[in-house]
Image 1 (cartoon, helix red, strand yellow):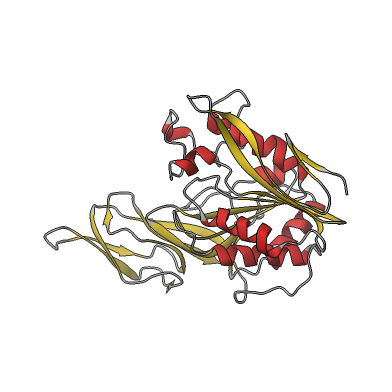
Image 2 (cartoon, one colour):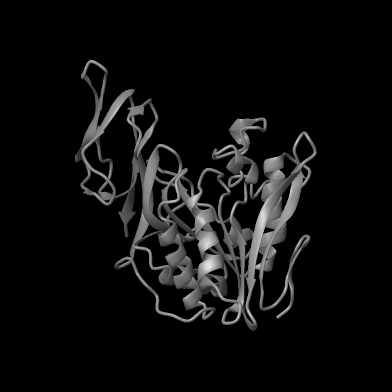
Length: 333
């Protein structure tokens, strides 16, 4: 196999390489480095990019890549190469925040959302996004993107793949289908449309359509804890088994269920949130999910399910304001 080169990092065949790429400088001129870990097998096979921490407080993905590279992968038996970016957004990781709070304008520097528009001469967040998009992604055939829920909420394990709205070739669709069917996650979001009432977030097909790469998101747990790292490691391991990069049997969490929509339930008034249910609750449309109560125990709002679906994200914080996300329901096919 050829040497994998990612800027100044050269990963030789049959080795584990741990290094860093300088992405910029702090005001004192100390380096801002993005860590890179590469496991190169002695035998030919696919190149898989596993990245985490594009939201810096989502730490369980970094822990998952640490365990994967140190404890799971062996270059003597690995077929192909696994490139790990355990902390993509290193400035936001340092300040334990979703985005780089040391950068202005804080409202528009979510590195994940900048991937399609980032400029190499732009903000630090843009330059980080450009490094991923223009230097790391082109090296790989498959992309595994690790996430957790942001502070104040938690996720049940779910995978996300491009749905019917993605304009991709049959060959690329076949690769995406392999990721979907092998990850072993119980719930897989595969949108049927580009928008819907109560939409949690709009489907994005940058990797599939613009970059021509098969991508899957694996997500569980919540920031800033490392809970769920074992689930992420198992999902990655399942995919590597499917791609014939390592030996083993795929371990599934349960029967896979495709979800066509993710629908957010938000508070309309402020107060203390008293939920009736938690993760995996199967709600019926119109069902009472809980109450928002004022400090004098007055009922500010009865919160009801807008759709029938499975609770895959729930709020963990007690005090909520108008617009606060309380639940996200996955609507099965």
